[in-house]
Length: 561
Image 1 (cartoon, rainbow, N blue to C red):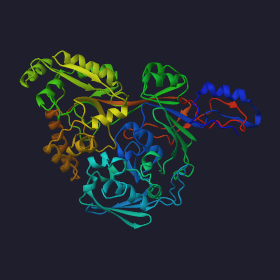
Image 2 (image 1 turned 180 degrees about the horizontal axis):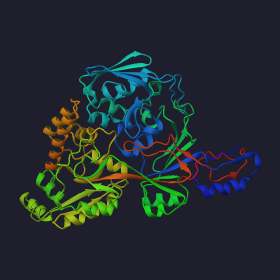
Image 3 (image 1 turned 135 degrees about the vertical axis):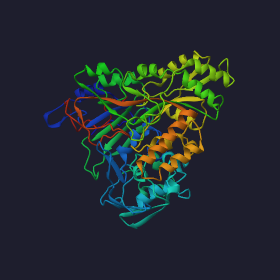
Image 4 (image 1 turned 60 degrees about the vertical axis):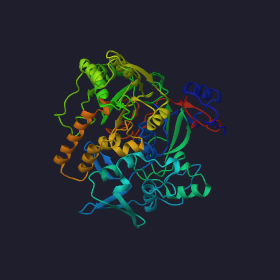
């Protein structure tokens, strides 16, 4: 058999058809080209293949639900916590001991670089969490030692120890009851790794491979990755929930929104992220445009450690100068709602008494003069190079903000970097101001308050405003220690008012998340929070060609450029 390896050639659908015609065909070897594969046009490359290490949506989409599982999951429109790797769990009355009872016969991936000798057990759960919690763990500082989501919620202060009761029972001992503990274990970050794989890598002295050559228990396993080009996954044949319906999943990394649309129309993509030209898609009988009301917020952030944004009056002035309604109409085209706080209206903790944003250039100029900048100043505004649900076009948004601020004497330089470089530079505080956002990992309101504005999040790089307000932090911590929802809401209202006064960031919009797909692709992909999943996705037969199976391997990359 002659094979065409992906590391030597990349070809599109038309080229495949030419090759098949060249090799000839017969009735004994009819192959449905691309029938068992789905190609997803993604907007960016993952930073890593381990979602424990980042909070980036591009990484979460590509890794968490494709490669891994968690102890528990959210399920259904009511977002009910349901069993996953843990078939059940028990919480003591004081809330300080949580015991998980694990499933048996949960298989890890078998790949070119790892063959497991056993199924998942308690050692894997303990390894996965102790790596995050214990600075003396042999894998804690592999890949840098940053676990932003868990550090933001201060999980190491909450979990005193993890106890192995037996091979399939694990108990978490908590320092105090926490209303969000289970919710945080159901997020895309709380994945389970293989302790056996980690031991093998330690012996081979290549520990960093645990995050770049991933092994999980999820519905797909990594086959090949090219930075900035594509990721190819194969189906995990021993998946404990039952095998995925497709044999191959390809992430075609295409940062250009026009490029993704072009590939979708040319049938080089089956599904595309963050589509533009919604009307054109709606008018195409072979395409489906779909959306989900997402828990997110897009915002303009200020680095409060750098002048002039270390001055609250300057931050307030900038906020009054920006016409958010124009941004909403131009960037979101009516497919989002104006944000008065970081918390969406759909959250049970949202409060209507929070004052609406005021567009007032006159007041903005007065505040600038009070702050000592009567003639304005020059500033840098960093704009994302990729589309995200919370901001579909950061460059254009930056230009609108540039025009608004020019009216009060502020000159804006718009800066952008490649996505991973953009995030890394933000983390290290190289910026003055920036356009970014947050997509919730679970429906509890704390997921908006702690990860992006707490003092701890400033140390981990998730709070790229670097704002630290002790009163705010104390309020958030109090909210986690009570089960009384009415009391929790009061705490969050206080927190939202502090943000409104201090303006470490200016919330702009809460938007829907969109994707487009060909009508022959079925199954749910989008969710209101967290990453996407292709586990339930199927694809109907559309193009059938004949080939001599002994001469050509059609499992090679189809449609990836």
